[in-house]
Image 1 (cartoon, one colour):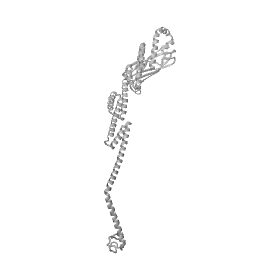
Image 2 (cartoon, rainbow, N blue to C red):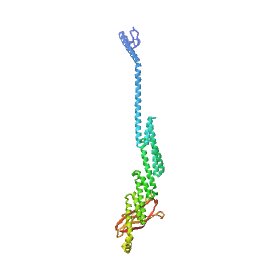
Image 3 (cartoon, one colour):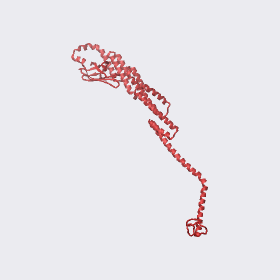
Image 4 (cartoon, rainbow, N blue to C red):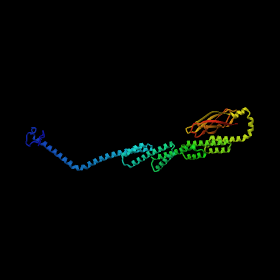
Length: 396
C-alpha cells in the first residue's frame, strides 16, 4: 500500500506514514491503492496492445514515408521539366528570330537542367551551326562591299553546299540570305565590268543576265546599262550623221531602241537624222540661192551668230564620269533647228582627252527661245576642262 498524502509505500498495518508522518486512513488508503492498481493495469494493457499492433502499423508508416518522398520528388522533377521546356521555347523563338547568341544561352541553360537529353543537344548543335553560318554570311557581305566577288562567290558556293545537308526552320533564313548575296555578287560583278564594255552587244548580254534577277535588285544597274547603250548609240549615230551616212545612223539608232525602248533622246535623234537627210538632199538645190543671200547682213548674222551659249556646266561624279550640260539661246531673227555643239575635253595636263558632239533640245528654237543640251563621258577619273569648239545649226 501507499501513503495517500506523499505516495510513499507503507506497511500494511502502519498508523502513520514513515516518510511524511501523516495519519493513515486504512479504508481510504485501500480504495486509492485499488484505483492505482487498476490504472496501472490499464496502462500496461494499453502498452501491450500498442506493441501487439506495431507489426501491423509498420507497413502503413513505411508507405506514408515513401509516398511523401515520391510526391516531393515528383513535384521537384515537374518544376525542372517546366523550367526546361520554357528555356527550350525561349531558345527556339530566339533562334527563329535570328538571335542565335541569345538562343545559345537559353539552350545551354536547358541542357544544364537536363544533361544528356538528346533533343536539347541536337538543338544546341544547330544553334552553334547557325552562329557559324551567320559569321560566314557576314564575311561574304564584307567581300561584296570590297568588290572581292570571286572570293565571295566561292565562299557562297561552299556554304550553299553545306546547307543542302541541313534541315529545319532554323536554316531556312540562311538559304534566303544566300540568294540575296548571289544577286548582289551578280549585280556587283556586272557593275565592275561596265567601264570596259564598249559595244551595244556586250551591254545587251549583261541585260539578259539581269533579266533573270528580281527586278528591284537589278533596277539601278539595268538603268545604268540602258543609259550607256543610249550614249553609245547616240555617239555612233552622231558620227555617222556628221559623215552624211544617214542609213547607218538609222540602223544604229534602231538597234539602241531595241533595248532602250521609246527613249526620248534616241527618238529625237532619229527625227534629226531624217530631217538632216532631207535637208542634205535639198542642199544642192538650195546652195545657189543661199549663196546669193549670203551678202545680206541679217542673213549673215543668222548663219554665223544665231546661237549664244548662256550657261555651261561640267561635273565629274564619284565614279569618274563627266556630265556636261548647258543652255543656248536663239539670237537670230529666224527659227533655227538641228543645233549641234562640238566640244573638246582636256585632261589635267591640258592634253586632249576626247572630242564630242551634242544636240540641243528641243530640236527647233524660235527667235529668242532657249534650249538645253547634255552629254556624258564615261571613265575620265580625273579633273578635266571642256571647251566648246563649234556650234552648227540650220535655219528654218
